Each structure stands twice: as C-alpha cells, then as structure tokens.
Amino acid sequence: MDANQRGIEAMQQGKFEEAATSFSEAIEANPNDPINYINFGNLLSAVNELEKALKFYEKAIEIDQEAATAYYGAGNVYFNQENFHEAKKMYEKALKNGLDEADVHFMLGMCLLNIGQNRLALPYFQRAVELNEHDCDARFQYGLCLAQLDLVEEAMEQFKQVVALDKEHADAFYNLGVAYAFKENTEKAIDMLEKALNLQPDHLLAGHALKIMIENKE
Image (cartoon, rainbow, N blue to C red; front, top):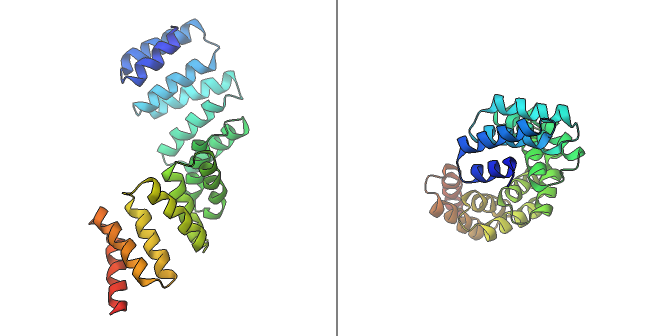
C-alpha cells in the first residue's frame, strides 16, 4: 500500500494526524502528482482548515489545469465560506473538466439558489436527481424550485418521492400540505401538515398553515 492509500484509509478511520503524515510522504515522493495535493486538501477541509485546504487545491490546479476534483474541492471551500459566486465558478470548472456527478450538479444548484437565481438552479437539481435517484436533498430542492416556478403538480411529485425515500422528512410533508392547500384539497392538506408537525412539533410554518386550514374549514 502506497503513502496515498495509507492516508486515505487513515482519513476514513478518522486518524487525521496519521493521514497528514502519509499525504506529506506522498507529496515528497511525487511532488508533481496533483492527486496528492487534492487528498491533502480534502483532509484539511475535513478538519475545517479551509484556507490551507484551498492552497492545496490551487497547487493541484497549477500542476494540472484539468484536475476536476481539485476544482470541486475548491468549490466546497468557497461554499462553506459563503462565497457562492466563487464556488459557482469552481463547480462549473469541475463539470467542464468531466466531473459529471450528482454532487457537483447539486452544489451548483445550491450556489445559484444562494445568489437568487432559482430558475437557473432548476436544471442542476434535475440533473442531480437523474444521476442519483435516492438523493433526498437534491430531490427536495428540485421540488422547491418547481414550486417557486408555479409548477405545482411537478413539485408535488418530487415531494411525494422525498417522503417515500425518507418518511421523517417534515419539510417535504409541509410542502405537500401547502401544495394540497393550493389545489383546494383541504383534507389532504391538513393530513400532510399534521404529519409534518408529528415529526417536528416546533415546525412553525406547518403549525401556522394548519391553524389557517382548520379555521377556514370551520
């Protein structure tokens, strides 16, 4: 097992100091291999040393301008620093260089949401769901985007699939309740909102919506 593999194993086991030693050895042995810097960057990100992590991703990119996972790692650093414009650029470069994975599309969608470009986020969430049908977070955000664009039926379909995957997803039940209320299906709306509150009794939006639904029904 080479130093890189030892580092990855140690990192997976939470032995971060041991991982750092192994990755340092890997860099010393192969200073022109971008993977070694990416792995060290991932380790530093995992322990929240974001500025240091960024330097390692930048070094990897300096060696190989097509190192897609380095752009992705840098994107995550910028996202965690709430620098969504820079994060977006990095994720786009990761995609451009062949990292066509669900997580990249999801994070790009999240960047666009955070900079108020919901309509542009939609296709990225859609692609994330296509690439990973079991990703609840991506499916939920996809549903929210559809709902914000008044595509209520399509949004409901996504929220239904979210609760099929995760029966304790209070926010999905809440949004289903809102959608049923929009469609004037009071009984179903109340049922969904009650489910949201059973799962999360302090869900203020669900509590408020349920109160209105019951008052209107009376």
